[in-house]
Image (cartoon, rainbow, N blue to C red):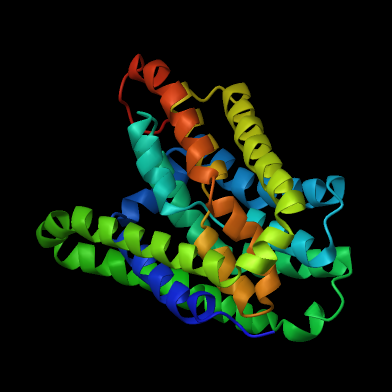
Length: 293
């Protein structure tokens, strides 16, 4: 089974560019919010690191996905929030600072969460043959290389040249997003036979994961007495995953594992965008304060 050049070469490069652009929007203070505003950050990170992958396990079982598709769905669920979640949170007038902090921290944590849940899902679903193709050390190294390292470089560049970065960042982010969309479309085209063969089962499971994760995470945030703006940020983080990371990691193991993330990426902006539009007026009524405890 030949690996697609889009998924194994171009996508990791595009992802590194995207993570570099995210780093240019982060400062050390974004990570200090864990201490200053622990409640919102903690709920957002726990939802991404635990709730999302566990939901993926449950939904894969519920829809009786074949092992490779189930592993791909869990890999997607274990992936961190995507940078587009920050933009959608901003458009929804949610707590953008909280969203950026959760994306940054979950991206760093993905060096642990992605390999961990990948290994657990392979064992749980009995994905025969995959265990021989997976080097967890290799997965950790790959996640670090295409997420944490460019993220850190972007942060360092911003710290050294803040005024220049403020000028070029919006344009750089647009380029990164266009690059991301182009590569994901390339992956879908390259794998179109397998995508369409499995579309019926995978689409229903992916939609269920997306809607359940957003609804449950929003409810948890409100029960924890976070305001609408913070709850919006957390729900969108759970709806808009870093599908590029899921595809890039999956492609190094078996391109069949990329299908759930590719399908998910094709509609997640629609559901999250509708949710952002729904929350826009509610959030507009709240004061534009930053994240709170």
